[in-house]
Amino acid sequence: MATEFIWALCSHRAGDGSQVNQKVPDRPATLDYLAEVTSAAEESGFANILVPCGTHCIDAWNVASAVAAKTKKIKFLVAFRPGITGPVYAAQQANSLDYLTNGRCTLNIVTGSTPVDQKRYGDPLPHEDRYKRTEEFLDIVTSLWRNKDPLDYDGNFFSIENCSIFPDRDTIPNPPIYLAGSSDPGKRIAARYADVHMMYAAEPKTLSGDIKEVTELSKEYERHSPIEFGIRHLVCVRETKEEARKAAEGLIDKSELKNTGFWFDMKNNTESVGQKRINEMGSRDNLWLTDTMWMGVNRVRGGAGTMFVGTPDMVANTIREYYDIGIRHFIMNGWPHKEEAEIFGREVLPLLKDMDPIVL
Image 1: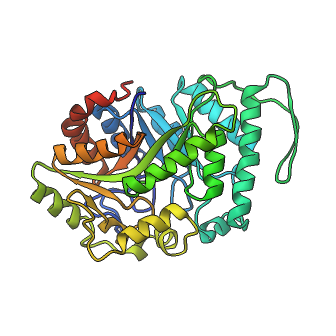
Image 2 (image 1 turned 180 degrees about the vertical axis):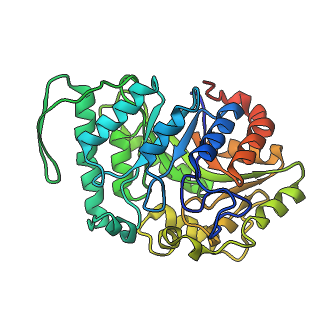
């Protein structure tokens, strides 16, 4: 099974620069800069790039479409939320991007963020109901992909009549679906619909149990291929261990969690099991959980907080620990996004050739 290395794009209010979460970014999220970061990731050997979503982000579909025109082969992992985007429109958006880019669309289904950000979009559904809606949403989307006849659907959240869409997708059977969720409902929906089940980079022992559980759950459903697993993490790679630690710790010197309200809410007002795991890891007495795993970013940012820090060999060995438990998709970023992508591609990827990385 091939391994996919995915960079993450900084298409949000915090932009990019020498600090994780500045009030005024050194490098704002302009189209030219986002294209520059994506091109750097593409040239460095990354097969895909995550385009985030939320009220703190530029719309992910617009970003992917605009940046795709300025790049050649890298795929776009477009994040979006069911319910805020309807299932038919989402399927049409996915098909359109996939069609116009000759198969460069992948889909990151985000069932929900914090209740605060959900309500900003006018979506007050509680946590459990959001997962029920995601299940219905994906039932409609996959039915549109699977069936040639017009679709009729009458559910609790969506009612569809005589629906067919244009254009058809380029990727068969469908643009791959990446779906996160460490809660029981999240695991169950991933087991049924996801091509890749994504998790924050909690410690390998914790994720190993999740992988076994979701793999068993997936056997209850008819699937076109076995479910795969991925993690979201951060990286800081330097020539020596001392240089890497200094660079990583320096990223939060002038950062504050309150600089981006979304990340404050994501960390402190979360219902996410995955986020709670990361928060617990970041609340321990020592932020260096291992010689390579650092939790300092969790102090100033919600979301991915586990950073792999060290020499190329140290970071490659940490990635291999997750590979050994069954992880085959690694979504990562560092700061600044452009330079850290180049360092990882130049110094770390050559050490991981035996993991059969996807090359576009």
